[in-house]
Image 1: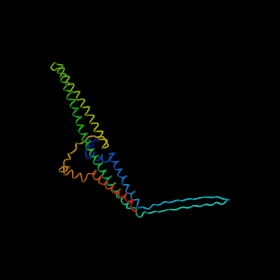
Image 2: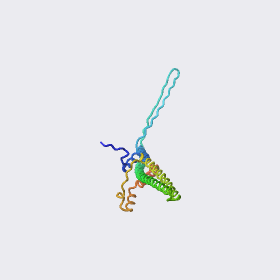
Image 3: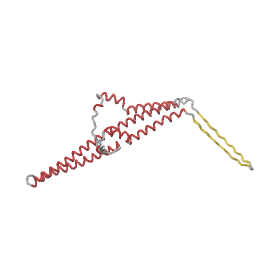
Length: 251
């Protein structure tokens, strides 16, 4: 059976997106925030439940060899019959907050995955540029060697050598900058995806997934964009919050 090393296996864009979806710390934090918001519904429903309180007291008195002991305890159970619909509206407000948090999570997911795609393509681009810069340095190094050889046999001038050397130095600086850009892109990739980029496979064009026209894209975004829907649910939560406050005026 043939064995293939991990470095020889190309990483696909879909694989990088899956890793970002599972490993990204910002995304995991947003998921935890949604779970915290979910608990608000249970807290709001507690307004329908009875309240139980208890108390106990005791005393001990000793006089002329006689000991007297006394004690008392009690339990009180109270149940609200009508609270001006405050509990009902509070539950609806909590549910709207949950819906807003879930849409906010979807928005975070879209942003993280978009950043992952950008980081993926940036690594490929910067690595290609760095490779071309290195080839350019090798080419100009050969140009400098040729200019020096022509000068040594009297067919060139010192100016030709100096110009060739200046071009080589500029190419070395450009190559160093390209290497720095490639390392920076790799660091961003690791931050988003959760691991270092290895052998990345070029991604396929996404033109087939785009809407047919700009108007279609705007309409689709207005209807389905999670940030817009999260804002709508937040408005609903605030409306129910106002009703909760108004309930205090009812008997």
